[in-house]
Figure 1 (cartoon, rainbow, N blue to C red):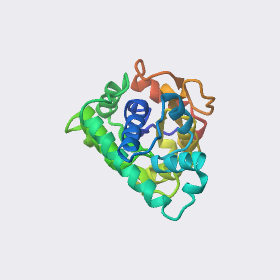
Figure 2 (figure 1 turned 180 degrees about the vertical axis):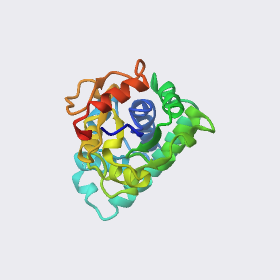
Figure 3 (figure 1 turned 180 degrees about the horizontal axis):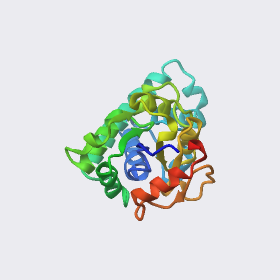
Figure 4 (figure 1 turned 90 degrees about the horizontal axis):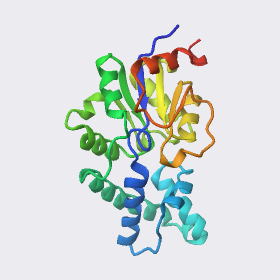
Length: 241
């Protein structure tokens, strides 16, 4: 039997409800700034989250409403520039306290640390987004909670591909069955599973009605979850037998 040694956290929708409270608003601010008549409502943004990664989401949207424009030679550079402005707006929103940790997350992070569990981040969002969110919500000592931060374009393929999990496991020098991933979406669960990492699902606002299978437990939040619960779920995982 393999003991649980590390928690691997997703960020958007898992640590915090960043998508609707932060990213969506930041995208709309960037659209206004660029003079675009695009606007992503909460409902539309929920649909667009099927595409992992902000730049990828922008390009998919552009192809959806203007395939000819999205196919022009300068489209990739335009998307990159627009995404940079979106990131700047997002970081400003986080700095101003627009985004907070989900219920139960702060307590669980502290409890894991006190029990000697290693913690890391495995996400598709940019490293700057991670750093700012962690610092704004956890204070100056926040980043030290996470031994490894796997984020953004550090790997070629984003979730549901397992690349980011493979990278984080390599940095931690741990086997997949020694870890437990915490995710909020089908793409995240599939990414962890594909890497062989047992995974816990804590549904966010945009994944409440989504069909998601394969997680050790399917939760609405982490508010009542204890470290012993995580150990119990990990002990039941077929991946570690």
